[in-house]
Length: 372
Image (cartoon, rainbow, N blue to C red):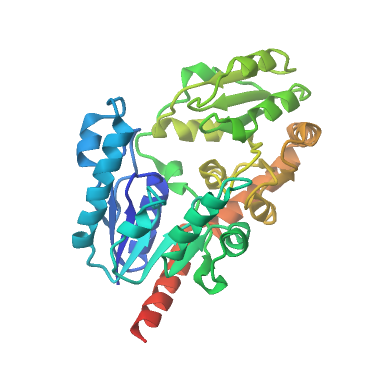
């Protein structure tokens, strides 16, 4: 079976490349059609081909080029038209539609085609946003959701035919546990003696950092690490950090892939206090490293907690978050139970073997349907 995966803007290179490698291990002939990722290293192609078809001129201009977004949009339209001549697979699997408001009009006619719903709708979506989502997802023969929560949103909020929606869990980022070029722990983190609570990823308002800092102010005997590229003002977080009972280290910068393993290995607990999300790459990194996790009850997070791999708290509930963090800091046995469950989940329902097997099953169903 020949499969082409399409992610024009390289929104999710770790996911794209892990899926491509897993499908190749299942016997598929896989090509990833994407663009050059400008933010750092990406996993090396393992058993599949990569064609950087999109945004060649924009990529050459770099991230800081003036009028980059407008230039890229103009290039996008011509690249989507050129895509028609590049598609020669049995099946096309889109990972993202880079401009969902216009892409359904530009999509090549080759069928069957499917789309992974990495993002569905914002909270309290407008009519226009729902209409755009319905047009984009509705242009597909099938849509993959990473959780039952996401599948229900596609059926109920977007209005998709339930027969077109398939749940296939996101695989864990286990390639990070075996990087050949791993770096030492970043010097900004020093040497923590007690338990370390880790928040990792882009620093954005919806991720509940205010809630986390307020909750950590009541936690004794631990250190908090907040690590990631900032997309928000940090002054109020630094002020809150000074009121905390334990040390808080804020590392506001892009973290190279090779720096990630020692950070996660040193962490005793991963916390995702998000106020809204469908899922999270940090979640699947935490599972890969077998780490205890505390998650807000948003999106599909509860489905991970159902496997015993995480403790769940209501989104935005400072007292609940503080209580669970305090309990786990003081109870090494409870952390060990969560860690063991995370390791089992990573090897089972959230493994790439499971994801690829289910994806191949969906491909065969679509091809059988097209042949009738």
